[in-house]
Amino acid sequence: MHEIELQDIINATNGIAKNITKKTIDKVVINDKEVTKGCAFVAIIGDKFDGHQFLESALKKGASVLITNHEVKNFPQIIVKNTKRALLQIATLNRNIYKHKLIGITGSVGKTTTKEMLAQILSSLMPTLKTIGNLNNEIGVPKTLLSLNKTHKAAVVELGMSHLNEIATLSKACKPSAAIITNIGISHIEYLKSKENILRAKLEILQGMQEDSYIILNGDDSYLNNLNIKHYNTVLCGIENEKNTYTAKNIEELNFKTEFNLFKKGQFITKITINAPGKHNVLNSLLAIAAAIEVFNAPIDNICSALKNFVTPSMRQNIFKVNGITIISDCYNASPDSMKAAITTLNNTKCAGRKIAVLGNMLELGTMSEKAHFRVGEFVKNSNIDILYCYGKLAENILLGATQSPRKSLTTTQFSEKEELITHLKKILKPNDIILFKASLGENFKYIVNAVFNCF
Image 1 (cartoon, rainbow, N blue to C red):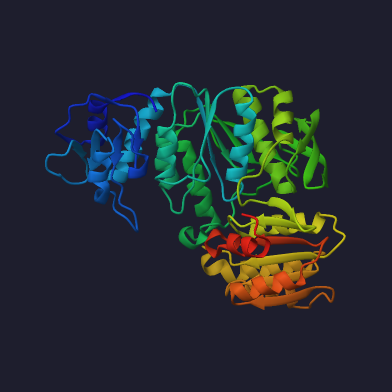
Image 2 (cartoon, rainbow, N blue to C red):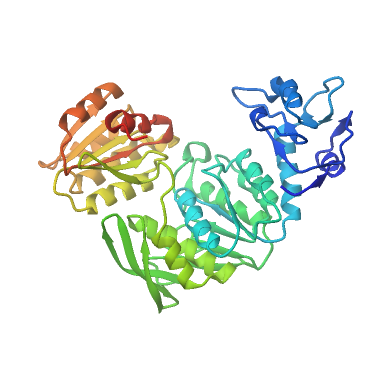
């Protein structure tokens, strides 16, 4: 974080100062365990906690100012109406001091992987800040912006949302120099009701951007490839659309790596190897490549090297072997698009044993949930997967889709208890098998993977 005048914070938050003697601050925290001498502590109120309970602890550990929503006598504090909003306002002050380029990334799926790819490319060229994990909400984005300091020459920030106007607020704080939208899927459709509303929500990223900035889009997405976005430099990336500026051709997958020939406007540039499987990761890499070249003029050698050594983010298609069994642990999120991408990876992987898919509930799909799960089941039925195990009430529809006009070579079982599934997997798995675990984060499939393989 840069050093910020406390008076600027008071002005930005419309706060009331009490008992403050310090003039500047260079660290802001929301967890009393992270307090260091001289920092500011913001008392955030969450669903399960209230930071105001830790004010005394923060002071004892050295906090010099507290940001609260009510007065606490004799405490050095800035009193504000809403501490979450104040956190974002302070983060915006820090962003305004930062003078280098910041890339904002949003989309229904793939934004974290795209962010990691782009950050790895840029880190080979300059000190780069990136969103840690998927801290992409009203708390995570301010924490990332507050981490910006004078050493950083580039930043890659992920913006998430569940409702309209959330990305608009985050974008105005981030002020992206350029934006990437990975796709328009049906994640969060329970709240937004339609893909048209999801598109509207993702395009809110433009609200914090200056005209003539780059907006880099998945050109194979039907909701993104025909947008008429005036006053911005639009770049399309993909595999199928002839309008794409950046295109991947001759895609080959081998040993969980993917190779393709990179073209720009029909001209061959180079051969790219990604240390990740699947066409969906080709799309993610194209978006990262386009941003690196168009916004940062990154040398192609740095791009090639970074993607060749790319490591997938935690719980997203992490691949490892235990006792001769190959595990694809993809337990972070699940939407119809990401489910099909993971199933395609399993389908395309060569295997001397059996191909097994363990699939769970996809959450936040609202009225589309039953049909979406059923279609995933149909997708499995039309693959070369040998065994399908489903866990969870919603996933019963995956089983229904897979067993309607069933493929004889597909074995299916529904489980209602995790321990029963774990016990069964321990009994039936053999060397040379390959097994995929995929469900929404709330289903805690990581627990199943660890219980079976003791790998985390």
